[in-house]
Image: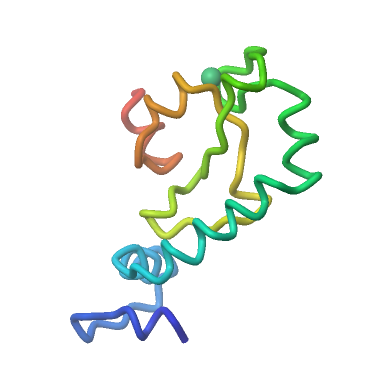
Length: 110
Ligand SMILES: [Zn+2]
């Protein structure tokens, strides 16, 4: 498994969150998921999402050139380039979000 391959401290926790935390340090994970994101960006699925022209976060409408592909759980935090984790975000929301997970954004907004 790639997860255990990426472990550096010899600590194995059964928690999925901890495993993803360790995986986030793994460069091959990031490379693989960025490549997958590139492929999906060229897909019909993504073009249809862009055509809707609605930012996932602020729910406002933007021209396609203002919209970016965003990982709800960032690749750097163990997120994957799957259709469930990829959303359309306007540049402002994408910049504000940075590398926070949805849970962290919620905490920050409290
Ligand atoms: Zn937005």
